[in-house]
Amino acid sequence: MDCFSNFKYLLILICLSLASTACTAFGEEGARSKVNPEPATGPTIGKTTATAVPAANQLVAAVQYHLLSWNVESDGATSKVICEQLAELNQNDHYDIFTLSEVLPADLKKFRYALGKHYKYVYSKSGFSDRLEILYNENKFELVRHFEIKEINILNRYRAPLVAHLKDRANGTEFLVMVNHLARGKAEIRQKQAAMLVDWARDQTLPVFALGDYNFDFVFKTRKGNPAFSNMLKDNIWRWVEPVELIDTNWYDNPRNPDGIDDYPGSILDFAFVAASAKNWKSTCRVLVREGDFPDDKTTSDHRPFEMTIVKP
Ligand SMILES: [Ca+2]
Ligand SMILES: [Ca+2]
Image (cartoon, rainbow, N blue to C red; front, side, top):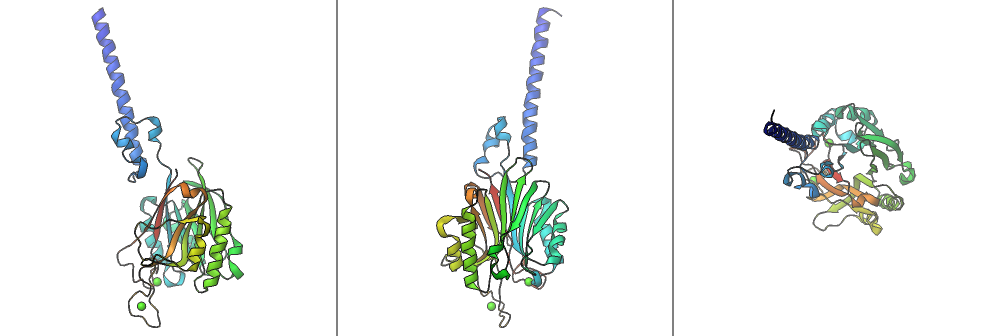
């Protein structure tokens, strides 16, 4: 080879090397969208699409989790139907964490298998036939500990809040997930429970996400809940994650005088709250409406499920 041929050879080598670098960069971009098929939200929108070759720090996916909360109406539904509906809601393992209330003891394990063996669960010992259950994707999370806050189960007649301390296996993020089902019949008990939840949350250092059936009777028209709701919001320790659209979460038609019309239209009983550093996370809540869900029947729940997406800052 003469001097000119050497130069051409060198040029070809440089071109080949550049082409290979570009392929690698686009390959990583493609891989990221597979890992995170959810539409990008908030600040991530546009970051990767506007830049042909993103910087390494932009390839890190946002730390976000999908939670689903649902009162499954213990004795007013069948485990068979609830299992089918849970599996349908959780296609492709969409939800990382479930917080359920009104779970019959016999159904705790069934709901886990409806989601898959890689979901594990903890449950409340309190609650008689209306237990609380937290299920989590074990591939994603390690369970650090779990506990019930027994004092809030006043007179041992209701349900103690159930808390799971989870740790993300991939990035070490730790947080608490709580499920609540506050007293329905006795307003003063519910009010006391809400005040005690505030006292408990005041001392928390980890992010806290608390979902469930709070029986706060929040009416859309007046934008007011019952006195327990006011207690819960006292001192801004808890922040309510209001659903993006206010949709009734509960169907109730007095069985003594049924007229096929919901007795409490335009109101909700089910809520998600955040406390401590969880207030810095981006949290979005949505009530899930499925075709034919209301009025419920003897096999389905009288509550709608709702979901919350949380994104770490
Ligand atoms: Ca029912
Ligand atoms: Ca009615």
